[in-house]
Length: 153
Image (cartoon, rainbow, N blue to C red; front, side):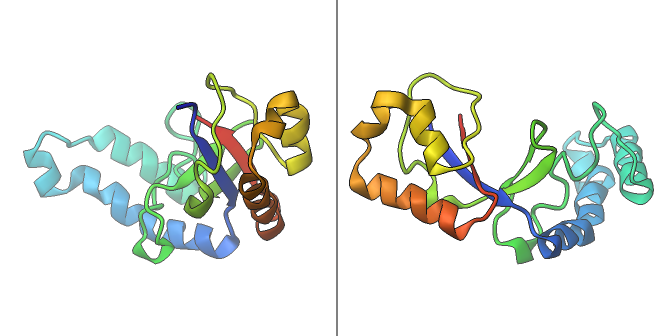
């Protein structure tokens, strides 16, 4: 079957602002009465996340609130839990679901692909096993999503 391929593009400023608007709502769920009843109460985490949000400081494991995905379930984003912080690139990316699993690879590589050309060099001879349709989809993705990447997992 093979390893999944995930296609991401850089998040836009507008999308980040939508996350920022929604993050306090999601974070407040940590101290919500209904959440407390099911044992999910975590005042310490709430305080750390709100400090990160209000003061632009890292909180958990040296990450900022946005790196941990808080706010990415804003209904206006239409892509709940689809953000991905990529530390190697120091950026926040959003999944482009329509391209997901266009092709598969073996193992679970940590490689991040930035272009079709890089994909070809990285895959070597296996690149030529991809169908014309798959290659067209990869080209289309990079053409339509400037700064886009492919990850595996």
